[in-house]
Structure formats: C-alpha cells, structure tokens
Image (cartoon, rainbow, N blue to C red; front, top):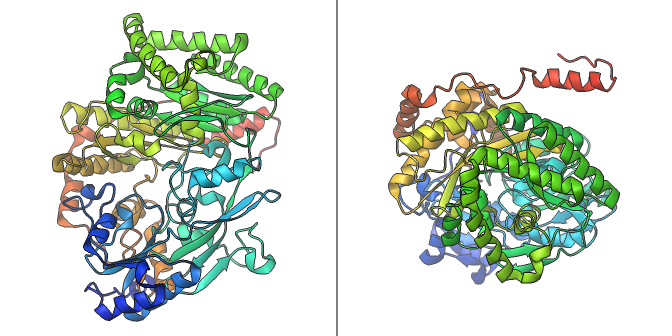
Length: 633
C-alpha cells in the first residue's frame, strides 16, 4: 500500500456547537467569529467565480484569530481531537484561502502575528511573523542599508506566506531570487499541533541557516508552489535580505494610488524597447550575463497603462494612446549602483546592449550616452508604430505628463520623465501590482509562467500571443488587448525566467468567468504540446492531474509528504494534494474540448534565437572565458 492511501478524509459535517465553545475557551470570545456576515467576508475572495458558480467560496464554520504560536498550536491540536479541518491565512488573496466544503473547517487568521522580530544586518536575514507585509519589512530594511525580495502580488502581501506557502516571483528576482529561495529558518506548527523550529535556531538561537543536521525540510514543506495551508501553519520565517545602495528613506510624494518616487542618485530606471522576439531573447541573456540589473519586468501594455494612471477612467483614456497600447517587447529595467562611477559603467553597458539588439532605452540616465539611448528608443518606437501613430501619441503623452506635474508640482518638470519615476516606484515598492491587473474589468487570471530558460520563456510568449489572438477573433476574451498579456521577468542573474499570460475579466459577468476556465485550459494544453514546462497554475489536484505524469509524478511525492506529516488530513488541503481526486465531468469535458480544438492549438515552428540549448550556451560561455570542460551530460 502506498503511503498516500493512508490519508483519512476528515468529516465534512458542521462541527458540533461544543467545538465552538472550546475554541472560545482557548482564545476568548472576541477572537472567535461565527457571525454569517463575518464568514461571508472571508468567503469573498478574488477569482472565486472562476472556481465555483457564484461570487462566494464555501463558508468556514468559524474564524479564529490566535495571538501567538502557542495559541495556534492549541487550536490545531483541538481540531485534531475533534476531527475538524483548519486552514491558515495571512494577508490572503485568492480562492486557495477557501475550503472545499461548506461549514466543514475553520480558518486561522494570523493577522495578530504581525511583528518584525529581528533584522540581522551582519548575517543578512530578517525574522518576521505572518502578517508582516513586503513594504513593512522593506521600509525597516532600507533604514539599515538593506532591501528584501517582494513577490509579484505586491507591497501589501505577506513576506512569510510567499516564502513558506505559495509562489514567490517578483521584479527584483534578477538580483534577489524567488521567495522560496530566500527562506532560511522557520517556525512551523505541524499538522498535528507540534511546534518545530527548522534550521540553525535550536542549536545557536540564530536564524542564519535553514538547514541543520540531516535532510532539509524546506523542500518538504513547500516544494515549488507551496502547500497553500495544506500542511500546517507557519508562524515565523527567517528570510534572506540584501544590501541596498539607495537612501534609508525613499523620497516619495503623493498618495494612493498616485505616488511620485524620486529616483536616487546612481540609480537608473527605464524601458528597453526591442524589435522582435529574437532580439528580446538575445538581449535577456546578455543582460543577465552583464550582472547590472537589480529589477527587470516584462509587462503587457494594458498592465503597464493600468499601473501608470491613478484611476480606471484615466487608464482607459491612456489605452487610446498608440504608443502606450502597442508597447510590446519591452523590458522594464532598474540598475542600482552604489557609486557614480559604477552607474556610469552600467549606463555604458546598457547602451552597448541596446545597440547590439537594435533597440533603445528610454531611461533616467543622462549625458550623451543617455541621449543616444533615448534617441534610439524613439527611432525604435517610430519604426514599430509608424510616424503617423507616433505623432498621434504626442497629445496623450502630454496629457499624462501634465497630469503628473499638476499632481506633484511643476518643479518636477526638470527632475526626469514621470514615466521613469512611476516605473521606479512600481518596481522597487511594488505599489500597483494587483491594481494593474484589475483595472480593465475588475479582476484577472493568469496562466503559463513556466520556470524555464529564457529561450523557452520567449517561446511561451509567442505561443500565448498566437492563442490569445485567436480567442480574441472568436470573441472569447473580454477585451481586445492585441493578444499581449505578458508579465514576468528574470531571476538570479537570468538563470531562471518566467512570463505568465494575464487576462482581465469582469467578475460580475458569469460568462466571462466561465471563459477564463477555457482560456486556462487552452494555455495548459499548449504548455504540454509545445513542451514549455510546468506552468504557474499547475499546483493542486487539478493542475497535478494534467502535469504530474509528465513531470516526474510530482503529485505522488506531495501525497506521500501529506500522508506522513498529516495522516488525519487535519490541515485542509484541497489546493495542495488529494490522492482521491478525479476531475469533475465538466472539467474533463472542457479539457477534451480544448484538445480537439486544433485550430486554436496548432502553433507551428517558432524560432526565437539560434538553436543552442541551455547546455550549449553554458559550454560556449565557459569556452569564451577560457574555462575547461566540466563534464556536461
């Protein structure tokens, strides 16, 4: 018998009233909520309508708010005794915060655990509780000459949750990696209520290492996408932080959602424009090898426009500007230097790279090199748009700039382009991420986003472009965005990359919500057929049913982990793993329908760079620098 078959399914009937009384005795009446109005606020989650019929996920039986790790453990032990499932949440955003069954589980809301416990400047780590947000930790780190990774969900998201329990990509990934790769030690309330501190803490009282004697637990507790609450509760996390070359306090003016962030001296922010996919692929490899970038972002026109403008109506006007709505194949870039000489060198490297790629750079860099970069950018855009559309864009751009100057003062007229200042804040502070996706419609879903070499990432962008354009022609996507919904970037010097494909929709429209399911099914099938890797949406039983057989049967591993650490299935794991999962008839019918739609899925040959494989590229890189062969397979 496989270990996964030992999981017992917790009861789905509503917990008995005495269970609620016991929770109240543990935490106090004020910290246990059963009022239907409160329960509905937790059932109202982003993307709920793409998962269930309606706007609300199944209700929890109760919401509890423990004060510390001891109370969390006490609640978990009570749930095990009473055979009631639980699921923890922190800042919470998405249907994975919800349960599979109505009234069958409780939610552990960790918002009272909201402290930054330590920032170790010497050993470069910080220890946080679950409700510490990205911007909170970043603000305190910057005061000490440090910075922290911020996940793409934005500045308001939980640092701990993205490191321990979910996907964790962000624009700073080229210099600061993934959230999961920054996780060091952690405090874990196991599914049965024991308190475990993994890493160096128990031996030294310090959190500098995530591993002690024996195998690492970090891969066990989260894998790639995390368990999303299905494997206990994490109450503390030690996270790697990085040196910061900017000021201790960023100079930010304005108010939400329209901020003006002054670009610090020796920092460069701007937009690289490239002529085609091949140039984008080659430029990305060269940029990663140059090791000058602190932030990179691929962003579709409609996501960029939504992030630039202070409200949806103005963003809709901005989308009418040809230059803005056709800014494809752009890489948003920040270089953060510590000294003026380093900044000048970075500026020259940018110039060399954009020249070689036949592109341009509209950035905050100055002098003759900066002027050359800007002229090349204008020439590049004019070639792509045509002179007529370039001239038609001028009034709209002027209206945007005048609006920014009116909002933040005309003294900014000579302090650089408002585009660059807005870009800098959006990437460093991540202050508009979710709003950008929701502006044109009210909500969004994403697909693709495989973590693969840069060549394959750019190929995936071509595949999604072709499929999205066909869906637009058929009227199956809510808005005609030209087929470009790209959002992603480069990580760890370009060693890993991803571009996901974001599509907006109106959550008020059931037909649009249904079409997002077909859209994701088409993208997943394309990832399989085009061999693009395992997508960002491959987590959970639904994703694993399609991708696990082609990726080392990874779901069998998660099932075994779940069986060993949580044989009672006390932690609600409907978004993590389920050995008894079988696709619902509607899910299977949709998958079969998409497979048969060859007019949608046939892509043909797509070539974005030369035919060098990642291994060939590595060999060429080593040979160029005089290194000996090191035994590639």
